Structures are given as C-alpha cells and as structure tokens.
Image 1: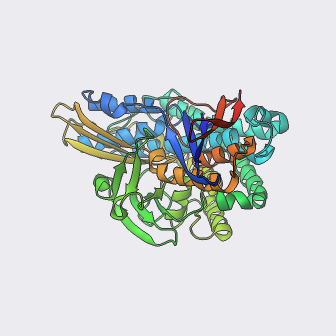
Image 2 (image 1 turned 90 degrees about the vertical axis):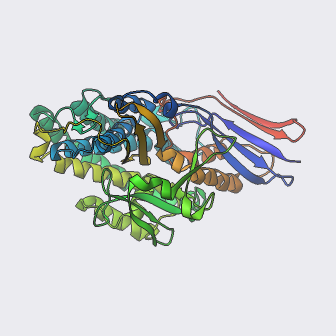
Image 3 (image 1 turned 135 degrees about the vertical axis):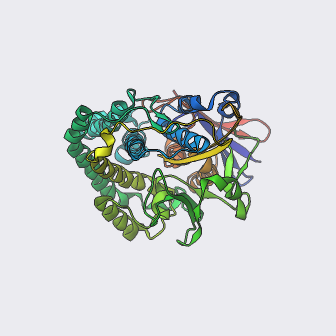
Length: 474
C-alpha cells in the first residue's frame, strides 16, 4: 500500500514550497518531489513595457537578490542599445555584485543554515533558528549580522537603497561612488575579512562531524555550469559560459549567453511552477546540471584573489578537483565571501569608481538581447525582444534556482531514502530533508523567511486516503 509524506511549507528558505515523499508498498521511499507552489508571471506582464524600465521592474522579482536581476537586465539593455559600458560603469557594477554575493551568502550561512550546524539537526525547532543562535552564541550571530549589513550598506552607498536600487541602467550606472562612501568601506573591510576567516575556520572544524551529510545531501554525478574569465578564472559578472562534468572534464567552453537556447532547454512538470532547465545535448532529464557557488568553484581554474585562491586549493585538497556533494555549497559560499571581500578591497582603491563617466547612452539599435550575470545562487539569464520603439515584445528569464531544480529534486529523494523508513516521522528526519534544499539556498519569490519559524504540517497518507501518521509544527 503506497503512502505519501508531505512537508508544507518548507522552512528557512526564501519563498514558499512543499515536499512530497512517496513510499512504496514496502514502506520505503520510492521518490520525492520539491514543489514550487507560487506563480509569479513576470515574463508575461513585462510585455509592453519600455526596455529602459526592465531593470527596475525585474529587480522586484526578488527582495534578497534584486541586484542580480538589476545587473542582468542592464546588461541585456547594453546589448539592445549596442553600447560599450565605460570602464567606471563596469567596475561599479562589479562592486555592487560582489557586495550582493557577500550579503546573500552571509544570510544563507549565518541565518538560515548555521542553526543546523551549531545547534544540531535534532534540536528543538522552536529555537533552531537565528534567535536560538543569538542565545547560544551571541558573538557569532552578531558577526554574521554585521557581515551581511556590510554588503547591504555597500549596495545602499552605490544605489541609494539596500533593496531594489534604481541604479544600474542600460549603458552603465547612474552615479559613481563618493569619496565619503569609499572611506566608509575602507574602514570596515578589516572586520568583514576577520568575520569571513572566522566562519571558514569554524566550518572546516565542523566538517568532520558531517561525514554522513556529505555523502547523502545531494552527492551524485552531474554537470556544473558557470561563468569563467578569459583564463578560466572565477568570474561573477563577465566572461563566458563553461560546463564541466563530475570528473573535471570540460564538456563545453567559451559559450556565449547569446546562444543559450542552443545548449539550455527548459522542461516543465505538472506538479511545480518552477521550470526544469537542462543541458540540451544530453536531453531531459539526463542533462542535469548545477549552478551557484559550488558550480563556480568546480568550473573555474583558479580565483584571481590570493587568499580565496588559497582556500580554493585547500577545498580541492579536501574534496577532490570536483565536489559532487551539494552539502559543500555551504563551504563554497564561505570561499566566495572571501573572494568578494578581496574584490571589494581591490575595487575600492580603483580610481575609476569615483569617475563621473559611468554611462553610455544610445537608442534602440538591436531588437533582441541576452544578458547574463552570476547571482549568488547561480547563473542568471535575461532575454528580451523589443520593437523599434523599445517596447518589450517577449521576455524569457532563466533563474539560478530553476537551473538547480533537477538537482534539488534528486537531493530530496536521496536524503529521504536514507533517513525515512516505514511510518515513523521524526522532526529531525524532516529537518534533514529540508536542509538538503537549504544547501542550494533557493530563492523562490520576493518574500523572505530568514528568521523565526513557519508552521509545518506533515501527513503520511495511505493509498485509500487513510492518515496513518501526522506531524504538526506550529
């Protein structure tokens, strides 16, 4: 008699989702689905809007990573206007993007995931959150909060707002960094670096305790995709697309975002609103690939900042040239925070970031454009088609969370098969299933749930509809 376990909603992620776990007649896990139950519709309701408004509109897709959509949209506008962004404009965009990576990764590690690491997978769910962490280790919690504030403040200094800054535009950015703001960043960089190094040391000490999680939290072969620079270095804004496999072989390299439809397909399933992108040459679902911090470390040859590159080499010494366990997303985020801090240290000393030549202006010179940038959660594509007046005719967005969709579903199934047997449902088991999703740090909507506890209702249902077990979390 088959049964189904439903986790609804999944907690400590950005947005709303649920998980269904399907048991076979032997009461063992047969399969699992990660459902995204929200429908956004941005691609459709942007039609008819002027291209110049798209950066501001699409930034509203997300309250956690508005900068990512802002930059990808502005880069798409660059293509449609056929302009070259001034050096100051590109460097300022890069500064905002590394600040965005820093603040978002800090949120993921300190607020959403560290309660599991530090308080325990089976600890009381009423305190297994940022508030419980504040009570157990107030100094660590404080440092995590301040690190995120540092990234958010840089975004605000550049764009006048922490969330949805109307700053990056087709052709560049609206304004440079002021000398006063540059001095503020300089003053606080040492604290940001110290906190990052502390978090890395802490996680590396804890890593030996999580050998089981490393093996079952999404450890499987797949492709990995991300941007790399001209020498294969870690990249977050420019460069070209690279795919590697789980053995470290380069499957495809020097791919242009303009041709993304040649190598990325998008499938749909009836049980989720989130699309399922896949690597076209391998078909669906065999073309499963992962994006985000783990993928970026796997696809790059090196990181161009010295301390982050040193950490990358240690990471590879620990886990191999290609890390296939999704649990290592947490480790990869911390390395990327260090890379972001070092990039900020370099950029803040660059004279171009206070230059007033920040934007190139032009009219509609192309009727189609594709922009790409690395969001904290992975590679982000914006594709617009416009008419002669610049009004949007069609929009396609391929977001990072969607590109991890196949991998997230496979991860949930792998964890459920390891921990769930029979009718027993323990809260700790369910938390581990949720934690597999949190490893990817999915961003499902503008709404965020970074603190506190959401209700959880789980039922184990027999094929005839009889409820054989249930768990409430209020």
